[in-house]
Image 1: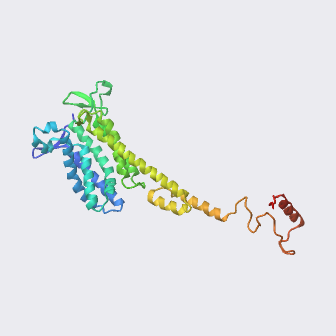
Image 2 (image 1 turned 90 degrees about the vertical axis):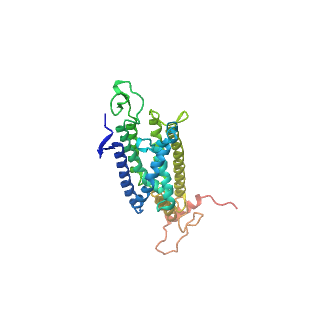
Image 3 (image 1 turned 45 degrees about the horizontal axis):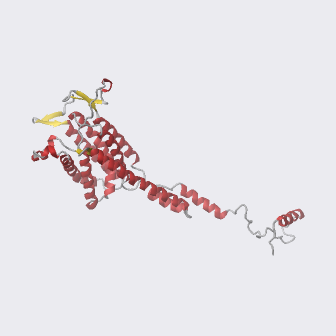
Length: 341
């Protein structure tokens, strides 16, 4: 069994859970600092945001847990403040982070959606790291595993207090959060509309959390429903719908730009704003330019009368036609249909 206590200081225990959470916060600030700088903002701004977000997130994480565990705290109200005894909910912390971003976006130097886009990759990594705190605390595990073939880590985890193997749901979520972090880091430099990265985080995290939460034995309930599953489902559908609407609008704008008469110039503008049309529009511009300078294959050549006849040049000139050429021209003119009176 893993010891939840890492070491002691003056007889006071220091837990692995706290160490891992603190490490996740530090790593998250470092990553967000670099991302803030890459986006052209003052990187020290993210420190200001962290000073607001960290306490608000802790408070909201505790409130969220207490609200949905009120039967336990109703008879001992003062235990609500004993946060060192455990009882924090990640969705509550995320809600607190969103509130902090709203406050900072209103009074700070970075817009709300930009703050969120900067932070969400680090948030996903922090969640992945924090899940190992559940391992040391022997918590956030799933259903009982009775088949000996699956009684091994990382499929299962042995819970000392119950003397049995359970699903290692904390590890499942660690893997999901880590994959989400990799995805967000891979696409963060693409030309998305502000807020799209945040919507992707909520949608994909919600998908994973919905299924993993269904395997856990310590879920918070709202009536007969698991709170985290309900919230995850709402996030998946709402954020997914917004992303689809944004994608459709972007495609329509790109298609309209491609059909515009000044395709090259307009396509370039759309490419700068939305990240599309940058390659197709110059080709359309060249085609339009070629159409203006090249004569149509079936139309009359320059300086040729519309009725198809050929105007003879003055005799003795360098361009005088031979008799054979004049004969062919006359035959060609005779073959064409003549207008009726």
